[in-house]
Amino acid sequence: MTSPLSTAEEAHKAVADRLTAMMEDADLSGARLAALCGWDRSKTHRIINRKTIPKPADIRAWCTACGRADEAEALIATTRTAKTLYVQWTQYLKGGLGAAQRSGIYQETRVFRVYSCGVLPGMLQTEAYAQGILRTIRRFRGLPDDVDDAVQARLERSAATLRGGQVSVLIEESALYIPMTDPPQHAAQLEHFISLIGRSNLAFGIIPQMSRRPVWPLESFYAFDDREVQVETLTAMVRVTNATEIDVYLSAFAQLGRAAVYGSKAKALIRRAVDAVEG
Image 1 (cartoon, helix red, strand yellow):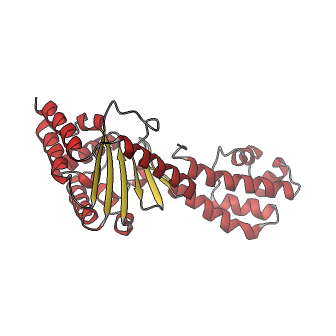
Image 2 (image 1 turned 30 degrees about the vertical axis):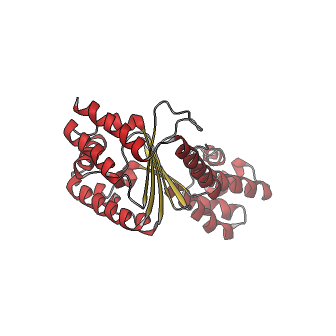
Image 3 (image 1 turned 120 degrees about the vertical axis):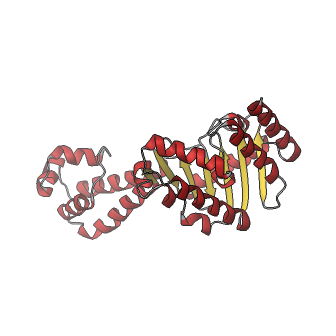
């Protein structure tokens, strides 16, 4: 598996590489370019080495100094795209948890693939479990309390997804034992999973703890058709849109799917977890 950050890093690298080539083609030293742009030469080196992401004004000044002002807007667009591929949670959630549940990509997607190694998948959560995880997120990130609105939005989004989409879910067995609510609500969430198994548009697999893995442990991810994968890290939401990288995620999902159990075997693992929670 490639790093979930690599799509964004690739975009930033492409901009830095083009700016460097532009400077070399113009036969400018770093010091001379800095003088033409009106900044300290250390800034030039930081941009070249990707220690600093150039702002639009920086890119325009650089291109103008190199006699390539016509390239500035395309490079600015690439930088902006990279910023949308790696979004820190402080930025992504600035509109509140409720707004974050209303992403248009869910309405546009027909085939969902979800791999979960920790938090149980949002689109299959009960109201009580969604309350628990969203309140935990709100407290951890110090957000305003719009949890009730966020829960309602999540439930509406989930209902629409299960009505209109083909959903494949893979959950690590260990995730069944990670409580984000009180035991009765957690047990109810697991019972809800059992009730969903058998739906015609839902492939629900559990990867047993001792199952031989075709790939090493991964972070949870959502794949939307074959056009985007979203990976949630502690600090950011990473959007993977590079076709080659998406293929790697989909291949990993398919291989993990062959390590999973389904139907009655999946129900048996879930019931064992319910017994542990209630015991």
